[in-house]
Image 1: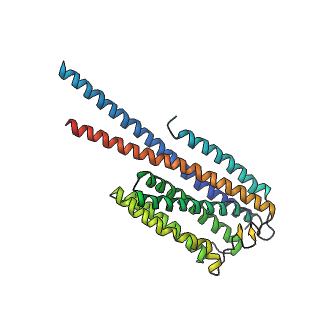
Image 2: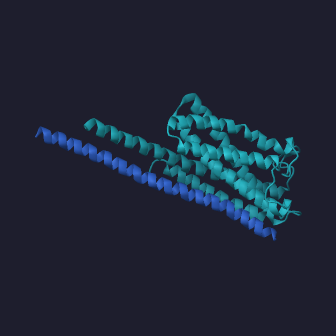
Image 3: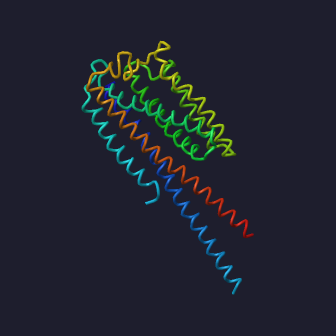
Length: 59
Length: 236
């Protein structure tokens, strides 16, 4: 078989591995960023809720 | 932009440029090898990937040692991130190697010392990652993982010196030879290999920064959730 076929196969495999890994980490990072935003929002809601409750109790 | 994003973007841009230049050197600038032909150009990916694997594994072993000594979460984050990136480079080495071996040696794989010890390192890394993802107790998994990583570090000198210690099909090192650095290569080939190594190191740095950022985000989410839970528990 032509050596160029092996060169092409080797190069393609190497860069495919890098791109698949990059896509995996990028997707994971995006999911974590969403989860972090949700958790921050939840914490904020709880804080606002408890403040409102305290004010309500006083009033 | 979130904290840490700027560093990742800058490193990714640098790595992209370095990789493109590296590819140009490997596929166009470097001359065709007389005996092996064009398939020898895989050297410019295979050897830099192997060096990146050594560097990443050394970082993993160092972070593991520091974690065992100091028990700081930061070292464990570095260890997990480097283990994944080291696995990627080890996989590239174990993929490009057989593809290069087939036309040159006439076989995809042979159980010689260099190939077997590299496969052993890959298996140790796979075991490390499985241990970290299935461990019920994160602290215990971090501790056992660190011990496993340090044990695996013993395989690095075996991989490197295997071609000198045993008779193998794998050729002697092309870069660090007994005749000096790069004495076994023509000047243009050595230049292409040097650029390939710089590109692999830039890629390693970018991937590590990206993966480390994900690891820190994950820890942040976990801590924030625990904080919300604690707040809810204290309210009820």
